[in-house]
Length: 229
Ligand SMILES: NC(=O)c1ccc[n+]([C@@H]2O[C@H](COP(=O)([O-])OP(=O)(O)OC[C@H]3O[C@@H](n4cnc5c(N)ncnc54)[C@H](OP(=O)(O)O)[C@@H]3O)[C@@H](O)[C@H]2O)c1
Image 1 (tube, rainbow, N blue to C red):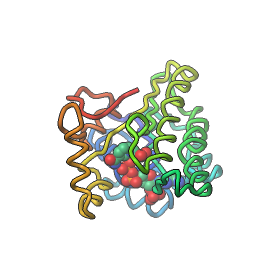
Image 2 (cartoon, rainbow, N blue to C red):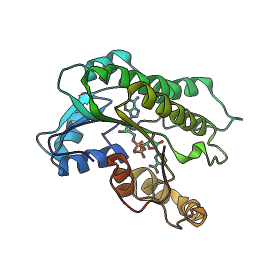
Image 3 (cartoon, rainbow, N blue to C red):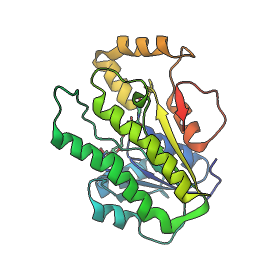
Image 4 (cartoon, rainbow, N blue to C red):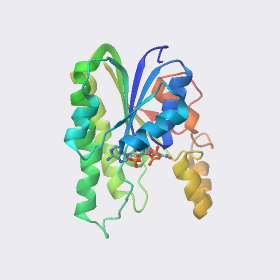
């Protein structure tokens, strides 16, 4: 659980679950850096939360921007990585160019970001990597995302061993109904799919954004459809 004045650095903090983590960390009195594509967009997202948050440009497809954004000496107490390439594909419509960009972001980019953050991480720091439950519960059309989310399981395990005592966690949400991503999909007609997921979840309820933030913060909360690795 972050303490006041801890520095929380969120890659992918300009929207969605990363933005919710940024807001919650700020509410706890943490120093927050939001990193995402476009300095203006990142700064704007930071300013909307509060005047003392920082926004920096970081594109996980661009090594130079990863290194630049993570250079510095100010310790990072909690590093959170959320991005994913937005396009999903079935194996029948497989497009190697899209897959290479997705791997660049989720696998190479995540590892590169942790690598460049290392000099700023402390023994008590934490790293949280976002995957998703599609790794274990695939659905037609999830081939690319299931593969990438599976890789996050391996990445979490190996980094936990290599970086100990730094705590490394992977978080694998099922669909988060109140996230902007699913609110948009529901508005576009995905309500039935959401009902199906809820009916098949053991708790008969889906995770909320607040559940996910609690998972990132390792904060005690009734668990539902959130798998911590
Ligand atoms: N929401 C859910 O229901 C759900 C369910 C299962 C798993 N997950 C996982 O949880 C994570 C977060 O999901 P979300 O719903 O919050 O997604 P989101 O709303 O799409 O947010 C993703 C964030 O990543 C940033 N981003 C994308 N490409 C980037 C790049 N190349 N470099 C740096 N930043 C980049 C985006 O900002 P810009 O596009 O502005 O750069 C955005 O801030 C994802 O890994 C997703 O697979 C989410």
